[in-house]
Amino acid sequence: MMPEENTHYEYRFTLDSGETKTIEVCLNTETLAIICPPADAPLPDWTRLEYSQCPNCNLSAKTHTHCPIAVNISTVADAFSELSSFQQAKVSVQGNSRLFIKTTDIQTALSSILGIYMVTSGCPIMDKLRPMVRFHLPFATSLETQYRAISMYLAAQYLRYKKGKKPDWALKGFVKMYEEVHKVNVAFTNRLNAVDKCDANNSALIVLDSCAELINFNFEMDEEVPKELEGIFKPFTNSAL
Image (cartoon, rainbow, N blue to C red):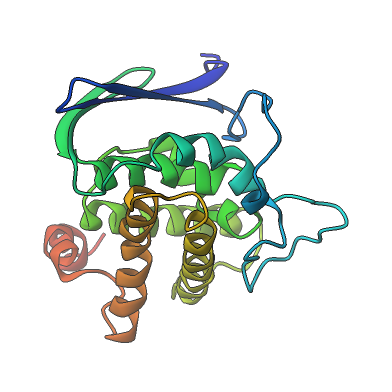
């Protein structure tokens, strides 16, 4: 079966006032790169690469005048710049094959959108999380996100093993990867300070980053796999294969 040409997610926010905001996300199904229409206005100053550039950024202003994430996310950030993070909304997310609906606060739903943009815009650091977008789960809990992240990383190690490359079964690179992701998330909040008149965008990014922080904390406490997950794998861990 041939894959669909593009993967679509439509996020529709219905506020208590009756106002609606719709964000349409389109991804190339094969590469998972985000597809954004050309900007119809000059890019804001905060999208320049050197504006609050991430300390671990390996892009050069000579070849990239603007941060690829900031360019793609600018329209979304502007749409939510005047909303409060804890403002309630009924949010529906229509994907290619599923519909999700939840009444939640703006920051929770917006963090789900930002999560897609952050890893599909061409940032070399965030690119490593791109496989997770193929199985995007709106409104995911921190435990669900940790499970998906660990599963993604281990699947990547198996593919490395199959190709004759050294796999990282101890997940040492997993920790390093999320340390770098956290640095990007922190630096990016400084960019969003330039557009936020309220706190929706920044709070959404903090929600998104909380998983990276939790993963790092777990590894510092020698709990690579959350205890909540260990129990359900006893059929594998307590018996011979």
